[in-house]
Image 1 (cartoon, one colour):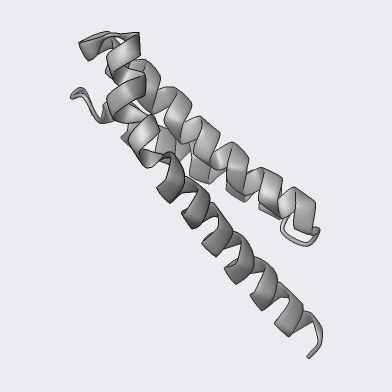
Image 2 (tube, one colour):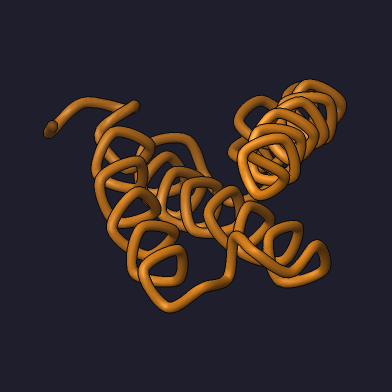
Length: 95
């Protein structure tokens, strides 16, 4: 956890706890709350990851190399997670 990727690894733990906390409070049953909670999780990962990476390589490099290249993938992963969770939720509520 002390290397350049340590912030991202720690961020995953914090984000998982935050998204799980919100899911326990019903945020996965309303579409906009689900989308917001997944986005909050990604913001946490990137905030902690870029902050930690900036200690090693500076802010501008951390943003250029540790944030920007991953934004499109993050949007796609968030959409995939959203449609997966929301679709399963809708399918199981009809049963």
